[in-house]
Amino acid sequence: MPNGYWDVPVFADISAEACGFLEAACNVRFFEQQHQVKDQTGKLVDTYTSTHFVKVKPTGKRFGGCGVAEYVIDDCYTTADLAWLKQRCGLQPIDIQRVPRSGDWHGIRPEEIPEGQRRVIVNLDSLEYIDPVKFGQVPTLAGMLADRGSPPWPKDFEKADPSGVSCIDVAGALFAMLCHPKRRGGGDLPANAGEMGSIDAQRAKYARLFAKGADKIKGRWRGGHILGTGEIRYEDWPTIEEVIERGTDISEAAIRYLVAVSHY
Image 1 (cartoon, helix red, strand yellow):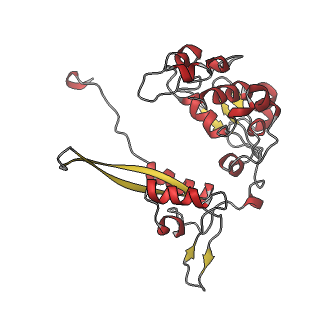
Image 2 (image 1 turned 30 degrees about the horizontal axis):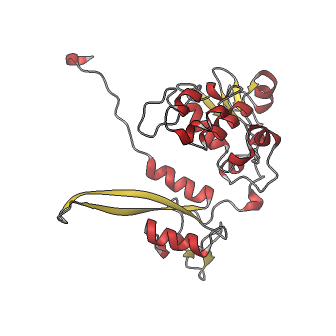
């Protein structure tokens, strides 16, 4: 600690790069909305920016050979949804029509999702892993990024709570595993029934869902070495076969945790 100060590392904000990748890989477009905060007299006292996203179809219409493409909104949105996005989130036509920030021509097409090696997400320190198949997702990198398919859901979802499965996926599970293990307020996710029940009466009704291992998931992989496995060996990293043979599948507990916090 030079001169009595902590040696704090310099952090880099890679949010823009991550958004560019996700726009191409997940068929979404991120857009920003500017807000103004005024006092009772109408004087401007603060400004801030919120970020939203909208789903688009994976391929754009190309105009001749000029390299320009125009995209359209995904079919999942109703007229009311689109009106809400325009009025409440400030969605503009260009937010949908433009190409991904990564510059790629198109995102992942549905028929491309199964292509590639099968993978699981593993903590190399504990050999615990989460399996996309248990989440109803195709076990490729594209499959982990894509939306889960239509019902019927996998059995693990039904056993946990069939009413709360709409936002359960591998990405959410990985995020929960890497979170700070203790709730610190400020919108941080609860880790167990006690934390869920202490927020308010409405959330307390769902505290019972933190059961059968769900209360031991949040932050469990914090600080660990995480790998998306492959079928083909790369350097000294274990293959998916080795991880499944030697490791512990904790997908069901992760699903139960995500079902519980979907009521947060």
